Image (cartoon, rainbow, N blue to C red; front, side, top):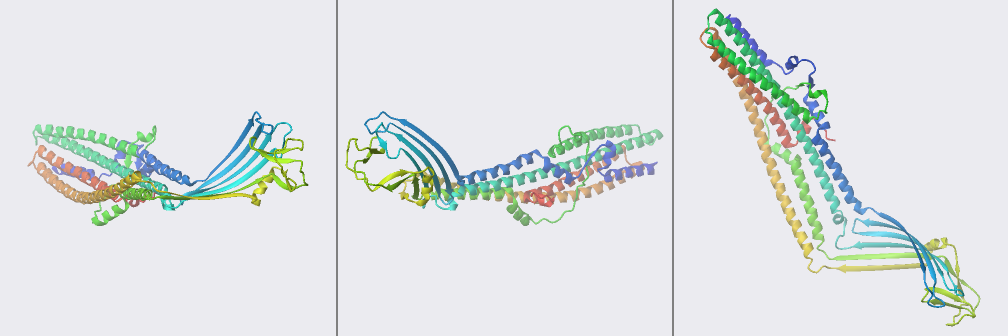
Amino acid sequence: MKTLSCVLLRVALVLVLTLPITSTVAQEGRGSWTLSLVEAVERAIENNLDIAVARLGPASASEAVNAEEAVFDPTFSSGFFWNEREDEPTSNFSQTSSSRQQLQASYSDPLATGGQWSAQLSHADFEQEFPAGVVVALPEVTSSSLTLSVEHSLLRNFGLSINETAIEQARNNLRISQEQFHDQVIAVVQQVENAYWDLVGAIKQLEVARGSQTLAQDFLEQTKIRVEVGTLPPIEITQAEAAVAERSQVVIAAENAVRDAEDILRALIRVPDGSPDWDRPVRPTDEPGFSPVPIDTQQAIGEALERRYEVAEAQLRVRNQELTERFQRNQLRPDLVVSGDYTASGNDFELASVAAQQSELLFFDPVGGGFLYAPGDAPQFASVDVSSTTLTSGSRGDSLSEIADLDNTNWTVSATFSIPIGNRRARADHARARIAVDQARLQLDSVRQTVKVEVRQAVRAAETAARQVSAARANLELQRKKLDAEQKRYDNGLSTAFQVLEFQNALIDAERGEIAAIIPYNKALTTLDRVKATLLEARGIDMS
């Protein structure tokens, strides 16, 4: 009897310590959801809500870049103007009515070097009427013009670098947004891995609890047999029954912990509402590993400083502040603006030679605003010889074709120099920009220091966790030997049920301690990859 009970206890211990995670599937029945660590991470990257939100950041920042680049987009505009006018005559030769229709199109293109050029094409029809008896030389006139203009600053706001400051800052913000998205993915992967290992640990703790419950139940049956044959007093049964009840409570709590861990993992990988996966037990297929290797702290710090999102963001913010300081320094300069325009115009009338007409008068009416032609019997105000030329009207298209002939041109060139007196606003803005640069550089130093500390802590945590695993495994082996020895003493009547149960509890605690060490060890490795920003590469995740 003693030999049989000892063998049974040893077999039970072996089963508890070697029971794989998948054995729980048989206990839970069919319909379990088997999930590997890689599958969990992939589903999280695809479906996680935090990643979905962060994914929109770079898209928004990219549009911000387009918005800043749009400052140099050209503009085309066109318009139509119509004016009708009627006036009461103030003289026999004053204008009584006029009509003007004008169509205009313009193109303006800003220059990234600090100016802009434009082109404007205009076409107009002008009609006028006078009192009866007054003959107008050109009652209908069609005119067209093409004007080319350019304006450029040569001191303040001159050059590509100054005028593209906002664009470069927007591109830096886009890189910051991309780094933020990358960091969010890393954070979610870490959360998923931690949740996965927590579920693995919860399942293993449940297996230990169930194994300890089985041990207590087997020990109770052995105790009852020994009490029946008279080798033990009845009080021993009470001790064994109390152990069974206590360990049953632990099993219930462990089962609830497994359900909680499953829900946390489901939420991270965003299981859809109404999916049967919410009700199916999750059964992870990966086992936590333990293969400690030496960690080069300085190398880890170097990787983190090169790859961490916080460092990249702080560096880009320093650059943005430097760009602002450069722009504000440029605003302290005086300004010299040069501009010029050239206009070529055309009309639908021409000068032609005619015979001498001494009895006629051609003059300009200052009130009506037009050229008048008076017959010979009209009052004469001046003697004009119009024997050499006269005006003839053509078609409307002549005004446009005449632009290329450059018969009617006009050009203007100007230069304007300005210098602000005092310029206190610009000086204050530049001083604030310098202070902002200093603040950004100090923040960069602070971030680097924080990253360095985090890496050192993560390295120590991984090394400590590795030593704890080794210590837990050594303790587990010793507790097995102690229980085996105490069981032999009990079989020989040299121990009590209370003592055996105490040794069983010590072994169970050692089993839990090993799990409590191996799971944090794997999580510590994940944290180390996280603080080095190498987690995605280490897991073979390609962000492109």
